Length: 332
Image 1 (cartoon, helix red, strand yellow):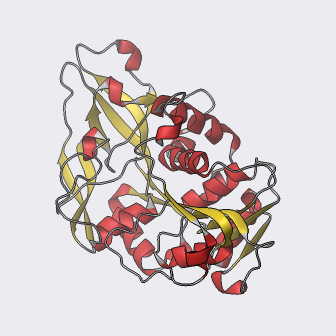
Image 2 (image 1 turned 120 degrees about the horizontal axis):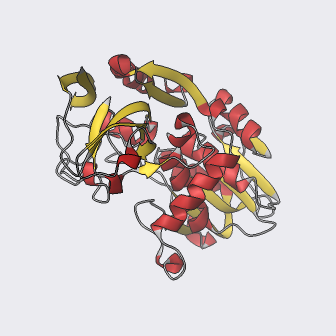
């Protein structure tokens, strides 16, 4: 038996690397992956080479803490089953279903402390959404929606759709999703948006129509211009997109200049200081697990692709993003 792992070799090139199956050390377990989820926005930055070389891939995740360089293994949403335990590991871990923030691979070694057992009622396909759901929870916490507010979400990728599903549980006056792709607008309506529109469907909004709170989740710097156009006086924009090295001129000389709009950076690796008195990352993660029990994620899955064909998934996302929302990699 061999291990198959996805590797970005150079920008715009991904390949599958085959290696001998690793053997767990005394304090390790060997996990056989069942499902891993591609995070299209972030992973396309790696695929396209749009990230600064040399910075840590993700300093908060042990398996991703090395400096960014090619060849690169990436991904952070693996769900699988423990197939072997080291001699110092409690045998109760054997055959347990677990989640790990780990790059795409058919088998991997881990310390038990780096694994999250799947809660009762969560199946592996749901668990693969955990990182994006935790991001969605963090975004909503940073946005702090208030009863009766008008809220807009720019971008209906997976994170935008999950944020929409969470916001739909609040007593808002309006929940608008702005997304250029019609299929994604339909998903947004299915998951809880009150109304949807393409970016060019609205003109100049008066303050009574504008959003009090806007989430910029499009992954494109141009989406920030759309968010500014949607947001009213003294409104706030939570920016969850990671633009990498992409640069686009932002219109800060128009209505933004006199509207006292607040721009809020939101990123899931940390908690905003205002929450640290009562919250920690473990508590936020538990909320994400609970939300996965209530949000229907199956309609977001558009493709299930075997790991051996994983490079084709990135070609699809790069050339025809309108045809995919959530791609899951599957493992025999």
